[in-house]
Image (cartoon, rainbow, N blue to C red; front, side):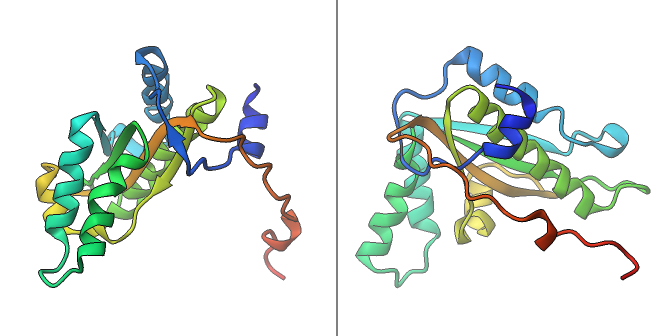
Length: 183
């Protein structure tokens, strides 16, 4: 598959099962992430991999982060969320004080690193979906995952084998999103 095919046809795969990407595939996923745009070479990202029983631990962390009056259904859903894929990659932005690179640019660079993982997964036939939700922005979840000051979760990337054939993306009209300036 060439690069343009990946860019034009990548879609999310929300239904995932075993097997997870193997060591060689993971190496390519992270090598692609490390090619994200990076003003001043700050490398404003890091990644956590979560698999096996660690997914259940993450589910417990999610459940503990819910409000004290959370329903049994909400607790059950939170515990099951990390079990939707055999491998999760937590993409973390590491924002650093820098005179020329604002925090927002560093967060965007980490987002580009996440996108690099998604594109690399697609090219390799690995199913992947980017998820966030309220728990991605929860201080208790961040602390439980060991995030330091200045770090924030950008994405929970769920990776595995697609349970079904991937959909064909709906074509979009470029003219709906691009205009010349001044008008």
